[in-house]
Image (cartoon, rainbow, N blue to C red; front, side, top):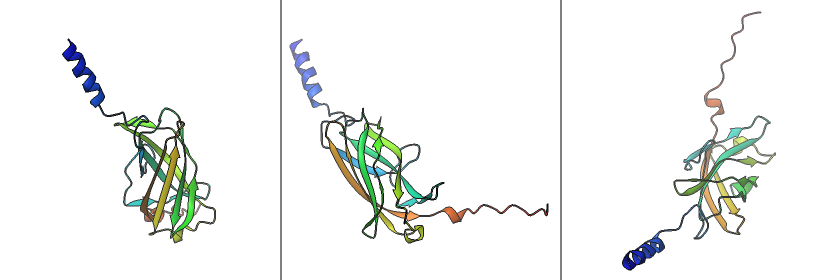
Length: 162
């Protein structure tokens, strides 16, 4: 019986920590996704908002952070070395496949943003998040901005003369 107890204790101490809770070196990957986290594609669509603004949709995947509570952060986007977009989200995380994930964060471009200046350019995205236990994680990525608004123009209604 003692042998079994020693093996059980050794087995428990050899298990890796749960990456959905604090306790190791926090890691983060910046992605995208409206309804679920997705890995960052090579190209990211510029969204024309309903109120005249512009944004891109981001998602985040983290490990070793406290995901039971909201996680506060700062996210910026730079074009040609100049900050052109920012947001300060509070993320609600979900543990998916042993990783904390969030989705649907809008990185909003400044009011003086001209979309034509960004199309085909690389957007450098940087993010830093802190959980309620003081754990901090940072990450960055670059992605090419595309605009698909004109690729599927709405057809003009037929003039019936009425």
